[in-house]
Length: 240
Image (cartoon, rainbow, N blue to C red; front, side, top):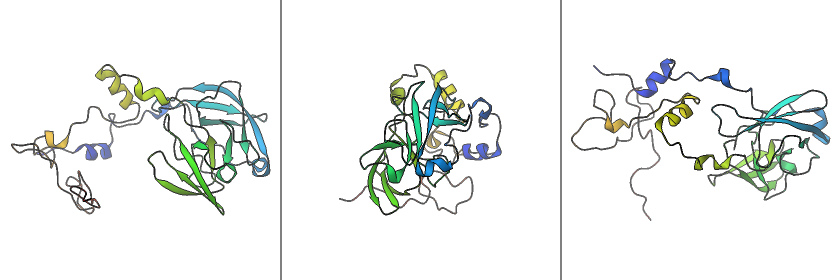
């Protein structure tokens, strides 16, 4: 009798895959765009920099004079007591949040909104940054850490600077238990066993006298068969 694949177990739910969201410090995103930010800027004060379980980057707690509180991904160099500014007229200094159309070309940015007002979706992991490449009308071209280039609306907000805690990847885990707790806080099962290391009853890639990978499968394949390379654009060695 076969058993459920990892993706099938995850879909069913259970304590192994349940995200410990009760440990989170809050919703880490920009506040809704204020009217003053459209033509001017609003001053915020960095009250604290905290750790959010399951997140590689630290989180900055900023408030303004009216008591509005915002949790944002902390850029490198931000410190408690620093004043940061949100708005179109803010200077492009580290920690300030501006619309992309007001950020000069060549500036390093992070925590970029996909749509104006969505709170930030791109470039939020520790040590990552994107580069403002060019402005074209109301669109702004941004290059991601992967090298991919994407066009954004000029009204999308971004934080000037790169995300803090870039050295986290250099910290050794030392033991498997540390890796288990790291993934547990992200609701990811650890360890993850390769499909071709399993028996055939447990995975489509399992079994056989010699280790071998799976074959490309259709995008419309049923659950259980849909593993490995799913509808790849190309396979094999790339021809020069």
